[in-house]
Length: 161
Image 1 (tube, rainbow, N blue to C red):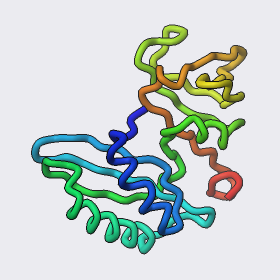
Image 2: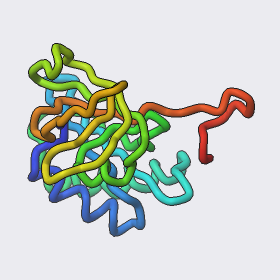
Image 3: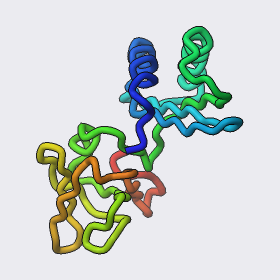
């Protein structure tokens, strides 16, 4: 998965959680001039702009002092959104029965992009129900995974919300 390097996760997660938020995941895309450090936060009630600003302010101070990233980068704090990215196996467990899209490094069933319902998690393997077959997808084989939002077209909103 596209999780940031461990030293960044170890610096950032405790601050986010100490502020009362779940640290859904951290992405770091290094680039000499246009790097991006993106932190996804969430709460039971959801996240609003003020939450992102609060976390961004706290993280900016720590990152300025610690300087864990030697190159230029932009800090972005965001909610995971309806199509939330997955970074950990526990997130697949949390959303069993939901539809996800998973990109894999090497084709599985001649596909690099798989969409189906999460059936279960067994060790480090996600079992994905795709039409009439159950696919076993090792966590380490995944390059990216996202929840597929389910909308109630009659009411114009996500199911369950």
